[in-house]
Image (cartoon, rainbow over all chains, first blue to last red; front, top):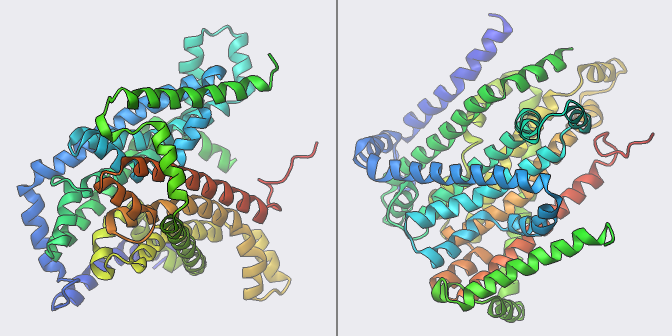
Length: 258
Length: 257
């Protein structure tokens, strides 16, 4: 067998082997903390497919995406204004940098005390916490646009709108997307945290509740689901990114092989 | 107006305006008791700074973050070198690591609380879990990305494997490890706070939870301000440490024309 075939076999085989090991080793487990995988999957199917699908899974995901979308739109817009208008930048720069230092989850208790435990609180917490990574990345991305390109676009007398959509946005794109990716991860964390802090709905709330009421298999089912969602959301984001930044990824590959 | 004083004046004006808006909203009772005035918050901040309980919480938070960070740095670099040096191991762990990478430690918080209880060990475990993976993956990338020519040259000069590891592979992986540490250090602080807030571990997270559930809103805001300052200190300190440790690397060298 040649090397690449062997390596890809190892790559694909290891997760399967690990899952099989978990299944076999835990099968007779009487340890209260680590129930058999068989039972966890059974509970997974009973809980999430589809008894709590609409009431909890969809609710959590809707909060996640609403919050993230608000953060993305606001972050990129404010980022543009901040980077292009020096007066605005000087005005709000220290504020942004101070707010960025606060751990995002620490904002959740503040919003609970301000707006209560409802959906608005969760979406607001997610949006505000996820705002800063994309905002800062947008500012940095625009500030690092090549000065020569800006000069050339001025020489060609591009209008302000053309300069922004055709020159600045594409060249800041890669950095904006890295910011968006961090924002998405923060949004996911705050989604879970906002549910764990005293609400009764959502995947995070159900998982923590299962732990507190000692329903261990349910807790494991929640952890599995959150893990899968965390992975899937990130994967979808990467697909979108690859699509939007195809020109950039292609040019990087060319530059590398040259 | 002078060119350099204008930005500073505007920055000061921005902060002052934000504080003023906050004060007016609080005095106007826009959000009732839940939004205390700036003056009350800063009074609470100074009272809090005078208590021993605050300083022991702060010490617990910083201590847990740094200890877990150190543990995961050592374990992460060792694991990363092992994984990055052997191709089969690298392929075997690739899928598992890629799956675990986007999963934040808050996901396994219920499990950690179940096994360890609301203790310092629980916080340490969560922080180490959260910081370990990025460090491992960056080290693997760095080790794998070592210039093969440099490695072969070292071998043909008769360097032994440990020597190649310490003189060629590790230095070339250092910038990757530096990046991982710069990302991991603020993350360690965040996870420590999360572990305290949601899991009941010791530290400022727990203090915030108590302030919120006890309705002590002035202390709540004061603690969040403290965390903001602490977060900035962590970010600044790791950036400075990275620059110091990697001053020899080309991305940190001053450009000489």
